[in-house]
Length: 312
Image (cartoon, rainbow, N blue to C red; front, side, top):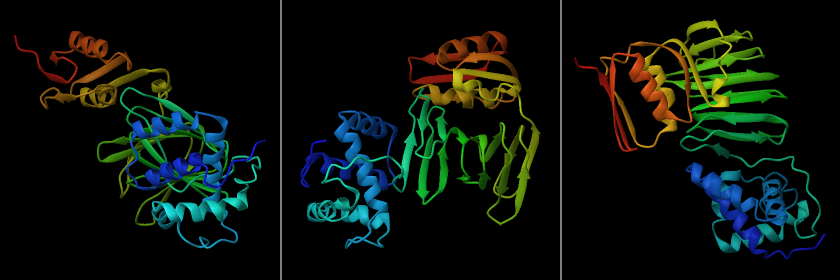
């Protein structure tokens, strides 16, 4: 394998990406740009992974003991970048061209999707993360312990090792199997597809949740718990399947698949809906709703949809 000098411009670019990720304002467009950058060449991908390792393996360098956030802020300065490359990365073999097996993940690694986008990632511990449209998850790995934070949207994770998922309403822990979490207004919904889980509230109170349950909870308590439906994961295949759900629930599921604004009049928000609708063709879904419900759907180009009561 060929060697690359310590002043490798690819390494400089990789540090720039890590600084952006740590900033906490890493958008779906930036994630896509990062993925494209990493795919430029095998060297780009290898340097990025080795830089991630460098944040965790500072065995004998002046950076040892400094938090990753502070470290990445320091790396915004060119001189600090060169010092980091010259010392810390030597320990993980960047300068020597040593092969790297991906076992580390940067603090605050962000996974995100844009409008009408679903994506799947294989995490470094073998777990699988799937995100629905307009969703965002931050992953951290400390030693052998992984944690995820659902910041927006909906996620499904296949757990292979003990995992905790933080949400704005509480923390979910599991040791294996598949879990699905989603935002539901001011609450969160947990679906234990084939895994038991423990739900911990900010107060410290805990509640065990058995597999095959759909649990709606807020930061204080469990609001409702019912057996999960067989169609819980239909969104993975691009479908919205509902049975006696409110129109408001259906519209909330459509919004991440459309640009612009979808405005629902409160007078029709409580109408009940059952059916199977294509997420990737929201125009067709809106037309089907208009045909089956006493509503009028007005679409102004692709930027504004008004849903109100049908008159006459």
